[in-house]
Length: 65
Image 1 (cartoon, rainbow, N blue to C red):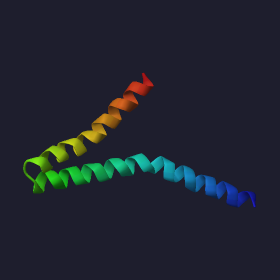
Image 2: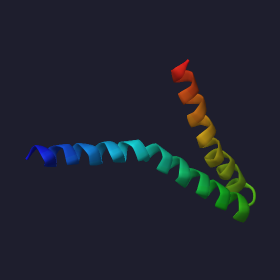
Image 3: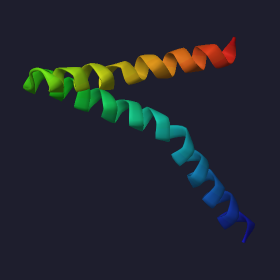
Image 4: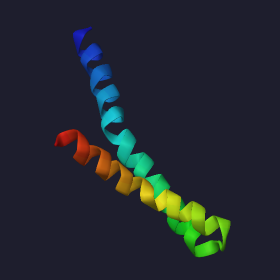
């Protein structure tokens, strides 16, 4: 029974590890697609989505130092 508990914990921690990279991937992809396909407001949305990874880097950098 202990093996199942550790397996659940491992799955939960694996999902937790890859959650933020997945969010950054999706934001970047949508930002690139919007930037290629749209003009005007979609360009602004694309800029906002493409700045999400930069914001994540700034937050991580601020937390470390």
